[in-house]
Length: 252
Image 1: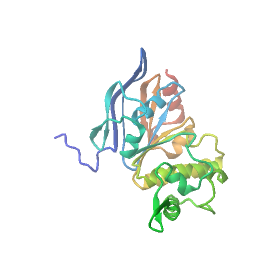
Image 2: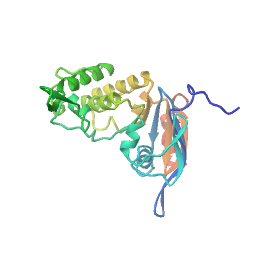
Image 3: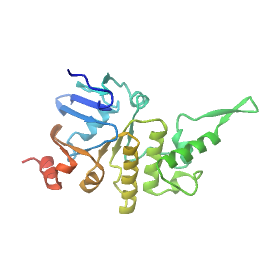
């Protein structure tokens, strides 16, 4: 029997995925999976195919061949919004936050909740936005002194928490995190690593892209190494070492 129970089925599967840009093969025949409560790291030098892969998963690129499955069912995303609607959220390095707005306003950015003032006039439902900010930050066990402050006042780690909180509020089951600890000091890096452990504990799947092997070993369960668009290897973190990962990345 080949039946796989829903409980053991991966949240996300990528099967034999390839992406060509004209004659250039940016990704070739890649297969990987992410399970609930698991962090899978993507590692590789610049040009290895990491960005192409996450953009194919998140609906930015259409794969040239292969398939993507969510909870065992094939999916096709025509845009990043379609991927978000299915529970895949990508948090890029720039975080795409509106610096002049509060946490709540950033959570609802582009999807602002409205209420009727005096039963007639549509106005922003600021109370709902504030409550969402409070609950979401509490869920991540992340606390700031003023939820109504503009996010420009926050540190790098706190801003990462806001971006993660936005994804969690909209019920993302798969979070793709692109270099989330880059340009952060060591204490801030630790906060982001703690946030990712929170996501694992909530049963979400995380794809973690980083050049920092120390961070990868601190947070990931498995690592997929890419080299020139091809999967150079996959290892469980407990079964590998920094040296082995570097050898897979550079070849030989």
